[in-house]
Length: 368
Ligand SMILES: CC(=O)N[C@@H](Cc1ccc2ccccc2c1)C(=O)O
Ligand SMILES: [Mg+2]
Figure 1 (cartoon, protein in one colour):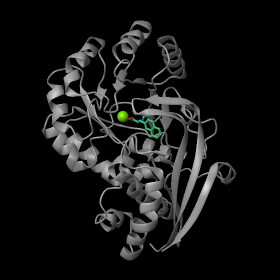
Figure 2 (tube, rainbow, N blue to C red):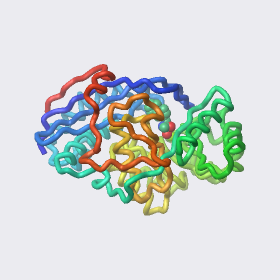
Figure 3 (cartoon, rainbow, N blue to C red):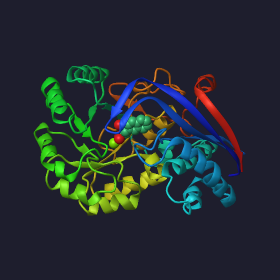
Figure 4 (cartoon, protein in one colour):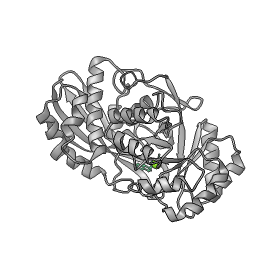
């Protein structure tokens, strides 16, 4: 495989409605796309970093910079024979897993398109459609929350995830349970908003039969999660803390999580995401595919990943229409609460050129 260069493309996608979490509110998604061009094909990778370092330390401008100044030059120098050579070539560069993931995904997509193999086939998908959950932001009022949840359940979503933070946690969960009953699959995501001293308060969620509470404590506080897991009945799921297969193994061994949210962008790519899946499966730990408000490009890859056998819980692989009025690819549309795994070569979807042009704010080409 001969790489001739990479395009870094910035796009700005307005959200259908503001999305509020414990770390802030977003009204549009600034996305960095990587297009890798080889002699045989081109491939796409979506960097999941936010425009600011609020979910993690990475952010769009920094990802573009480290790709331009370090990652793409390192990859060019390594002359990778295939996508499996990308991570080793980039390993000397510390961190920047979301930027690395976008580059590896673009190279993998190009390679698979040239071979006529789909992401699902490459990663080991065992089903052709996956059940989908939805992430519901912090709302201005309980009635507004119940309306939003009602809408998503009517659309057929298989699982509801509520963003929580101190002051918006037990009451919203109680209200959803009272309105929609005990059968609805329900979970909460704190995005690190609590501390171990909140354990007794968080035990207040135990009566509501949540599937899990996601990342209640700081991403670096793995031991704190292990302590918390002994103080509450709700299973603890980690998101921000899990950055690799090794970190997943350590967290499981320390008793810090009983469930893992796998996000390929957070862990450096789909190949590492599959390794985390395998480590969790070996420990009997269920996993699900997290979401970062991806466009159809990242969404396609996530749905393929969610089709692996260990993904036994519905993920945040929501339909395109959860976030965007118009996606840059053919939209992913929920069908009986499921999304179909793309079957075409590579990601199986490509950006619509006109739509891409409409949302593009910057393009740069880096020769290799
Ligand atoms: C679907 C979901 O809840 N995702 C993240 C949080 C999140 C929230 C808002 C975001 C805005 C722009 C980019 C990434 C974002 C990620 C999570 O699971 O923790
Ligand atoms: Mg999360």
